[in-house]
Length: 442
Image 1: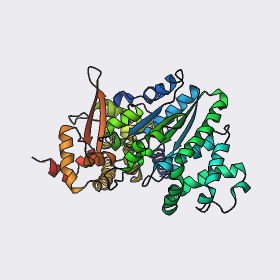
Image 2: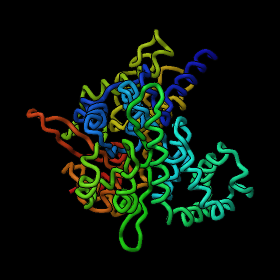
Image 3: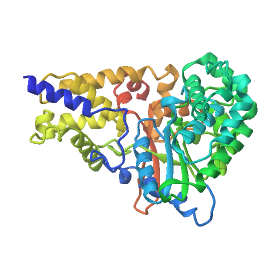
């Protein structure tokens, strides 16, 4: 009995939904052909690689539902670019630097500064230390230190940038005060950062020839609408586009999906080129029938997490009690990778012995459905019913909100002519709800 419980505990931990896979991890499953032939190494990587001969820099946007697998794909891109001679600075902005509930451009600029300083150690940091020294009287009281700037060692001077971003992320009152002091000087901070970058590019380690900065998890920025009707998404990625692009290195920013499906989509394209979107994995067709290849691949994803712990067991009959139980779990995820892992982990959490029963899967589905139902406003049930019928979305705030909250999912496939087709559907968990069924009746 204890041995069985230990195995179940190990399976539970192997289904961690929030940690992206590092490049080369054996648990990785390629889903590109089930996402409309998406390939980050080609879609984003080639633009960086091919720009070397032209001696120019690129700034690209990468988007998709939160939890769709973007971070895992970006880590694959990081590894590939390093093999191609690039020095890559990757960071997840929400881990140390920004608060997704409240983000402004200055927060992102300071985060880039912090991580470039921490990772590009061959560059001369004097321009950035000088910039901070010029602002010291304004900033030193904001929970940094009371001592004079000149009394700090260069290492401690540099560390003040990390303190600033930590305060921005954790302390709302200080967040606003720091922005008040930094916002008037973002242009000079960019100039100082570019001097630092220029020196760093002349001295890249290990024979690297290009510098790339990847800023992940900005797609999590919660939309906030101002009195003038503009959102913080527009203020950051459009109003500040020239500054976002101003760093003298290749840049990749993740961006909220909802911005790409707004009236500003063409302006986004004009500023950054065509943004790349990572859609869901197709586990069913637009007609609502299970899609065998998608189901098989999502089962493979679970198998790669679970079977190394139980190599002599069959996933469909000994880990789960039947193929139908496993298939239902995969279908209810809607092809959303994190949703699949969350459902699987919650299912495992509800058993004390193998195989996992259909009842345990249903209990996990019921719990997830209850949580998701709270994201739907009363007037949105009719919108969801229409999307389920037409598989299209409208260009308005309600549809964008449903996309952002993952109540509506985006899918892509290649048709017989090789054309990429995009369609949308309501989350399968929502389709199980009585409110949705009522709204769908003629």
